[in-house]
Image (tube, rainbow, N blue to C red; front, side, top):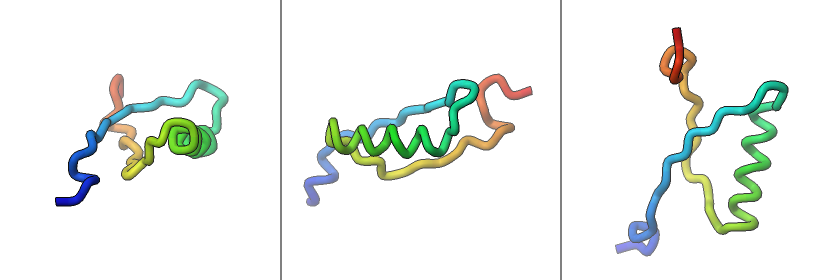
Amino acid sequence: MSGSDERPVFTVTLRPEPGVDPLLALRAALKRLLRDHGLRCTHVAKVPDDEREGAR
């Protein structure tokens, strides 16, 4: 069995504040998580507009 199978996996939902470039902010946040905390992103997916919380 691989050691990676024993590590926990977390799901986080992020929403950019108004005026923030979402892709630049996400890339910067993921870099900080890896460099400062050892948390590596293994999957990213944009939620479709019609599936977002509060969609009309």
